[in-house]
Length: 307
Image 1: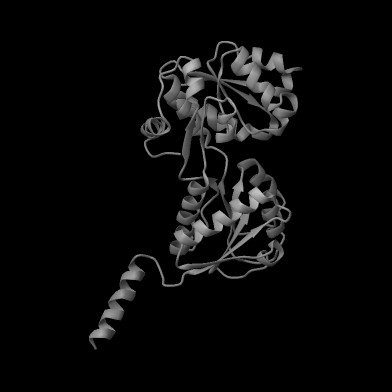
Image 2 (image 1 turned 90 degrees about the vertical axis):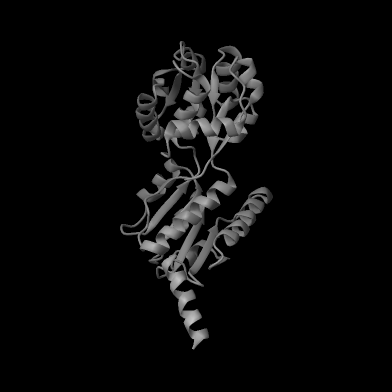
């Protein structure tokens, strides 16, 4: 009788916590033909995911099979744009969560997705508001920046403009279509102290990234706020970015929300994020030198828990 009572208590406690001994199945799917480095990233993602969600069974399946899965206890994890495109063609009803995908790429896929699909995402690109908060943190009062706009990133730019007004950053928007050459684009940013860089194919067709770094930073002394830690290593001033660990943590939170409520949260930027600062560039721009953690803490203070 005592043993039975203990079992009931344990089950009740698990139920109150919103967890079960076995919650469901995670079906991870990816595109074919990945490089060796990408395959290692995928393997690391799968391993870390299993560690975070121990009560979920995780395995890799082809995109075509994943797209036909049925039932709320199966969650499809689509790694990248091509995998999501293939999965979304299926006729299944199981929730689909895309990771390693930018907001603009996700929205392009969703345009071609059948109505009623249970699809959401953890975006891989930086939150525009966090990027503006980063600029404010680094440049302080009187912070100013420019952002180059094309038709593909208008939503991000609009969010950046709103965040800039809220946080007291003067933001100048430059439309790439109104300029005929790279020099003209950079000259239009005269008077601002930083360039908020978007990962935008249209812009880079006019100004390749390496040319942007030379014109903006080397020649015009603009601090470039990059869209990835790799850009920072190549000469940008700083960025907020979503690491592999950030992606896994955000995905795990999203799964728990689905598990608890049965609802699919809307796509959003990662709840967790990292900061990368180029100390050499900070010194060359005569900015107060701070490490990544200090900058991240300042961003959190500015945002006060927001994204």
